[in-house]
Length: 363
Image (cartoon, rainbow, N blue to C red):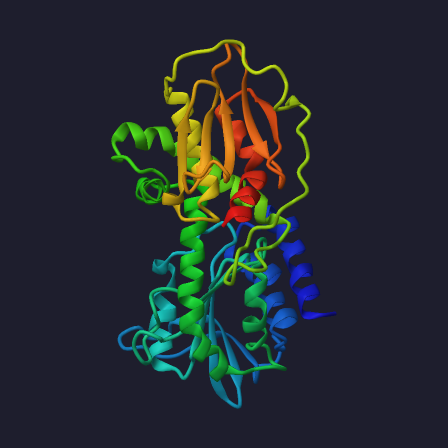
């Protein structure tokens, strides 16, 4: 089996059996030993390769045991401490690993509950295990970018020097990705304020933060959905956005701009709803252009959102002056406008691709 297939097979076993595992010993037998043998490729029944209940005298702690020591050429290379599958992994769980790491030749320590494997080394101080892992492998949510590094710890492809040299970058990239994931799940106030400052020109008051908090949450979810098919292939170079062929939502009504205009005429009066719609369009467009380039002009018939405050560069029009229905007007390459009915301001996000395409067209 290919390495990825072996990982997938063990992941399926963990998914199916995790709820039936209630003790540390059962976790080791069902999950950890198969990881050492089938994934890392070491013979768990050969004491020259894997020593269970490894013992070393550590200061006043005599006779303490670590669950597994992985050996190469008679030297300890990796230490593994296992907890039961239902137990969360915390740095407090790793006290024995800390002590053993300092008195053996091991450069890699692994803390696991059978599902999550946290890999540690000594980047911060020689022979002292770091407080934070340089690699975190979750068998139920495998980060494919980590697989080549994990492979370097296998028996057949063991390359400890390469692992250690890459550990610093892996450690901080992994931490940044986990921070970003947490913000995408539940944005903190500081994160929300940072994003608001990039798309909103006014003072960021408590009222503004409350207004934008749900928009930030929705925008981040929209972003993840937009990128899911592309797998962020160009995340670190150029634009990561892809322009899908626009499809018309069934619940929206499309009509050409030459259709009878509006239900009523008014003097120019910029409403709060128009300004909120403008901020949403601006938040979408600023993924392609600088925020200060997105301008707005109100008129008796519509609220225009323009690039560079130029009528020849329309991004969208908000037709919010009707008695009952509201529309957003979007433009094709020939600047023909098509209006779509909106049931709520949040539905503007459904046209994110069209707005981004217009911004790129003029950029």
